[in-house]
Amino acid sequence: MKPIVIATMLSLVCAGRAVAADVDLPAPLPPSAPVNYYPALAPFNWGGVYIGVNGGYGFGGSNWTNAGVSTGTFGTNGYLVGGTLGINYAPIGSGFLFGAEGDFDWSGLNGSSSAAACAGLGVPAGAACQTKSDWLSTLRGRAGYAFNRVLIFATAGAAMGDFQVALNPPANFLSVGPQLGWTAGGGVEFAFTDSLTAKVEYLYVNLGTVSCPVGTSCPAANAAGASTASVSFTESLVRAGVNYKFSW
Image (cartoon, rainbow, N blue to C red; front, side, top):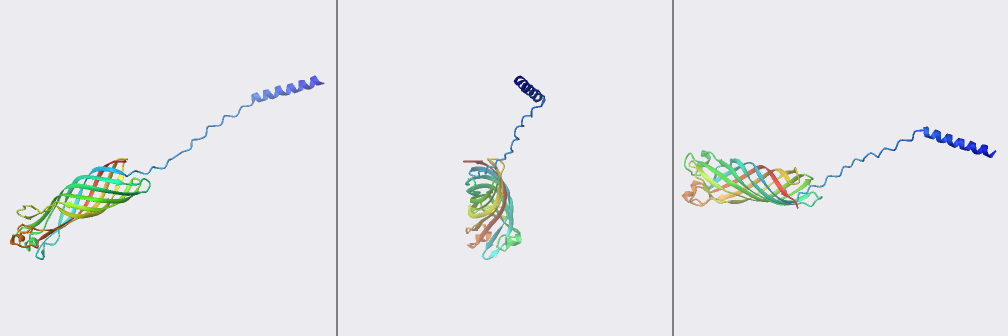
C-alpha cells in the first residue's frame, strides 16, 4: 500500500512541474515613469555695479525776461547720447532695490524765440533770443521693485548742464556757466542675462534761472546796465539705455 501512495505522490509532483513549465512567467514590472521636476526660478540678482550707454531725445522750453518783460516760453529740443555709471543694492528675494546712478550726455538741446517776442527786451530788430546746451549730467538716487527680471523704478537727484545764450543773428553764443538744477522721473528696466540689462526712462530736468551778468547780451538789454535780465531752461528727456552689470 505504501509503495502505491508514494508512487502516486511522485506522479502528482512531476505533473505539477510539467504544467508549471508550460505556463508563461509574468513579465517583469516596467521601471517607474520619471517624475517631471520643474525647479522654481531663482530670484534675479540686481545687486552690483554697472556701466552703460544711453541716448534719447529732449523737449522743453526757455524763457528770457528783462525788467518785467518776457519772451514767453519758447520750445527747445534735441538729441542726447552719453555714458552711465551706477550701483544697486538689492537684497535677494525681497524685490526691493536701492541705488545711485550718474550719467553724462552730449546734447543738441536748442531753441529760439520769435524776433518779435525778443524785440520787447530791447534787442536789435530782427534778432531772436536763443538758448542751447551742449552737455547735460545728472546724479540721482534710484528706488524700485523688481518682479524677478523686470524692474520698475523711480529716480530723483541733481542735474547740471551747460547753459548758453545768444541773439540770432549773429548767433554768437555766450556761456553763462554750468547751471545746477534738479531732476526726477522713473522707468522700466529688463534683465536679458545675468549681466546685460536694458532700460527706458523719463526724466524732467529743471536747470533753474540764470541771472545775466550786466554788460552781456543775455539779453542784449543788459548792455544798457539793466540788472534784472534772466533766462530759464527746463527739459523733458526720454532715454533708452543698455547696461553691463558686475554682480556681487
